[in-house]
Amino acid sequence: MQRRTFQREVASEILMHLAQFSNPKGNSEERLMSYCHWVSALKSRVNSVENPPPVGELFNKEHVESTLLLYDLSPCFKLGFMAANLAILEARSYIR
Image (cartoon, rainbow, N blue to C red; front, side, top):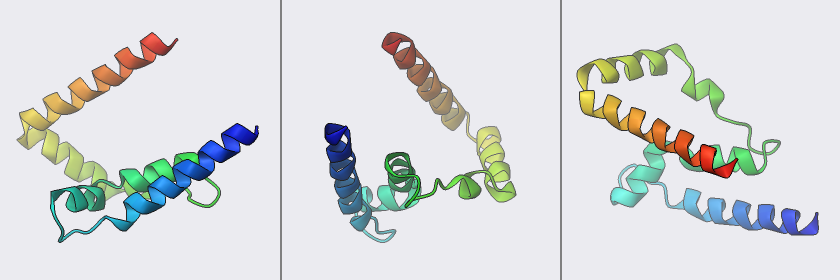
């Protein structure tokens, strides 16, 4: 139990440092962290009480419509998304 608590604290600290580097006008790495919201999603996985998941941002009407439009206009995006999902499913099958 103590080891798991320590791991959560370390993960929280790392994510806090990553969040400091998000800048929409910075270099490519800073912009990526700013646009992708993955740091806040990981923080919610580590401690969902202090960092509630950003589900409201992901499933609002505007986001769904823009994602569907992106699928329609960009076959490369659709292919990349499908390939990423397939890789996740394959990785999960190896874990079990």
